[in-house]
Length: 57
Image (tube, rainbow, N blue to C red; front, side, top):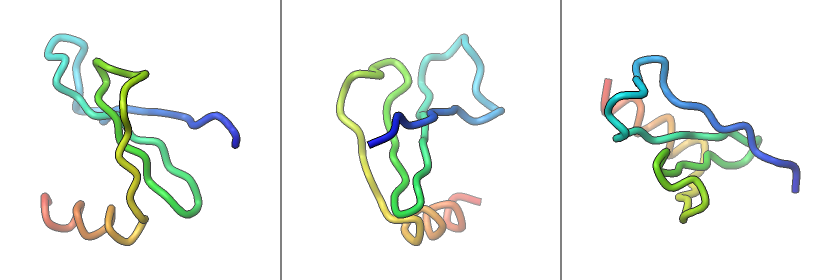
């Protein structure tokens, strides 16, 4: 498996510490806590991610 490229939202700042990071792959979206980069991740399908984004917008 290749290493994932993690990123935070452009709306995130370095002050709060309450951010999620995501990494995309062709068949999965990986989500983790930016404060615990070696901790557990949540992996969902791109379809589920799209539905989530539509809901929160």
